[in-house]
Length: 217
Image 1 (cartoon, one colour):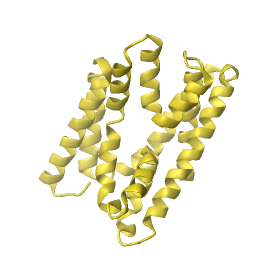
Image 2 (spheres, one colour; image 1 turned 60 degrees about the vertical axis):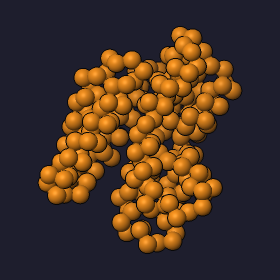
Image 3 (cartoon, helix red, strand yellow; image 1 turned 120 degrees about the horizontal axis):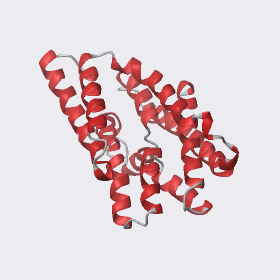
Image 4 (cartoon, one colour; image 1 turned 60 degrees about the horizontal axis):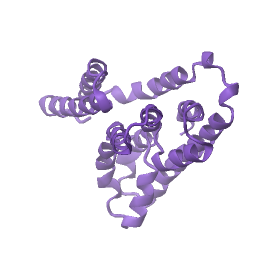
């Protein structure tokens, strides 16, 4: 997970700073970070909370942004479904973007390894510790971190470096192109519905390309 630590730390620091500068108290910000545990969803919810939007709308918007985790869970299920539900529940809380990517890279080699749950848990715990540590730093040091540092942009660059190697297969390239294009075109839709539509379209495009080309994603 070490290559992903700078991206995780940067995103979490930005999220912590954003929460510190919002209408949330320190306790509310920490609680939100622990419960939601998803930077994109937290950043999507903050302006709605500040605007006094109904709580149902805020929660729905956060869930929309986080729908990708349903896809991650479906992909992880064949590898981890043999575990008791309590263990699956705990591992489900630890699912993260980079943890999922790193695990799926090794999943074929781990498919018959009884220790694979510990490998997944190890990845997840690294993300958990880095995320909440950096989030607390952001909450405490928000006023001391200049905006010109561009931490959100740094986080994006690091994520791109990690993303590019996953685009080796043509179906994945098709899905990424369709999803990325639609996310820009539909950016103005309310409640982040453009993100949801882009995810669904990207998946559909990748599956269609996989069937057409006969290449596994």
